[in-house]
Image (tube, rainbow, N blue to C red; front, side, top):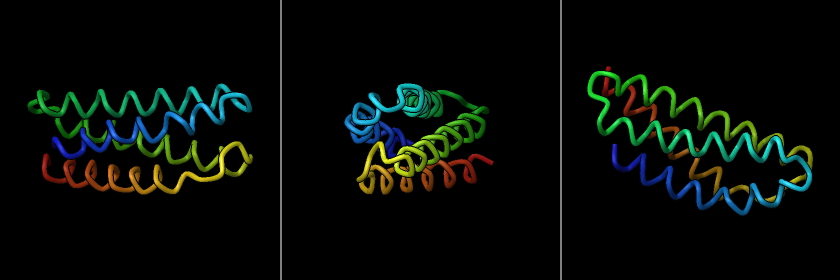
Amino acid sequence: MLAAFEVAIELVGELRPIVEQMRPYDANLADEIRQAALRAVMYLAEVERAGGSQRHALRLAHGEVTEITQGLERAQRWGYVHDCARAQRRLDRLSSLCWAGHARAA
């Protein structure tokens, strides 16, 4: 699961300038995305020590990834940000890793 955690940390770095760019337009949406990214990292950190609850932590992390994806979509539609392609590719990768880990933990 180390790979998913590393991707999540990299994602935080990708999202930081995007969140700062959208903050003047919609501080609530910027905070929602920032907090979801931080929660995803925390849930993935729990996977390493979660024992029997790994599947639950992975499901929660996947939900946060979905929230970030939807938040970025809204920000783009409103014109707050324009280029999220790198972050979106990282989100797609993280989503796949969470889903695959979830299936293995079953």
